[in-house]
Length: 463
Image (cartoon, rainbow, N blue to C red; front, side, top):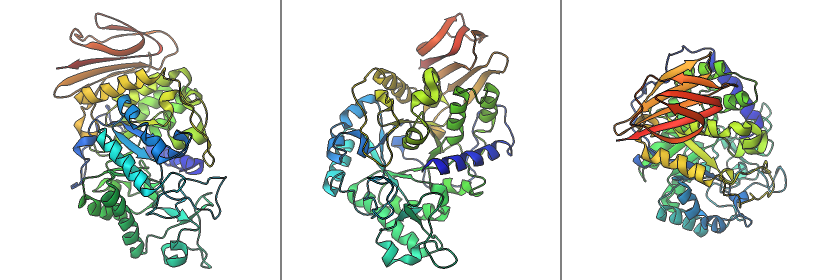
């Protein structure tokens, strides 16, 4: 997805926040649907790591990346999401190397990355290290030199004079027409291939909401006959673009993007939105998405880094506060992007080679610590497995957001400041059994918090 679509999603989310009823807490609704395909058990407390093969290593290959898998496992990641691994189209290509999302062939790998055997070895090494692998799938459009353009022109959307069309400003790709049932079968077959022949564990689906829910539902059923899979949709509550977005969570997707929350966090950090906007979002945030759907929270990803800024540009010295919330909010499914843990300070080129600079390990301990929190504290599990949130303080006078979550074997209390001055909060709770897991700018004495601007604290009990 590029900047144009990112703006379109934001417009849709703004419309959503003003049209749906509010609740007084952040407890999620149960699914309205009878679901057959829940998220696999191995995903319940998982952290996802997005892999940019092109930029991850000097070589930019499967084999070079495979050597880094043990380090990523030690960091605490559980799922590798590989950006598109397919050959990139040459016709109407953008830049020197083209967009990862301009797919020339759905059952081959990009020769710049290596060959199919090297990809299969990557998957095997990941599995041997206890990691799952999902790959990016681009079902909405293809490259202009994809064989289907010549062989199956009926697969594509056309204008009034019969010319195949593009979408938005994506001039390097051609838009599919899902009114053609044969396209459904061909695309599903290609997706089955990677699960059956290469043993991948699921998909991250690009602009999933631009493809009919029926396709994703039918494809999920076919994939499940091979093995249980995990499905992540690049979408949220797209009321303007697709008013029937809830259908995508009925036997199709297990997780989606927390786009609205992400855009808002950036705006708050830059002073363009306020704590009141945060509270308003938290009231609405869980209204539409069923409780068993994971919400992927992130400081950055490939789109945000390339088009909208680095973590430092977006958050400045507030990034740790937002990172804590990303790991502790209900349904939260945290993402780490290639190079994020190495304090990447540049916007990576999207259409060119632009290798991540490795060597800064100063943030490794931060990510290891939060990942261990996600793994050890059961109330922070993803989706329906996690504990519901009880908001203890959402006072606009002191701009402190405090909430707790409970599970069968654990409890967590989180306090975060959105204030520009020192604030105090008296919890009136017996916190003698809690341990301070991570904090910054917070003093705690007999249940009374003294919190500096943008300070935070996470307290835990593991029974």
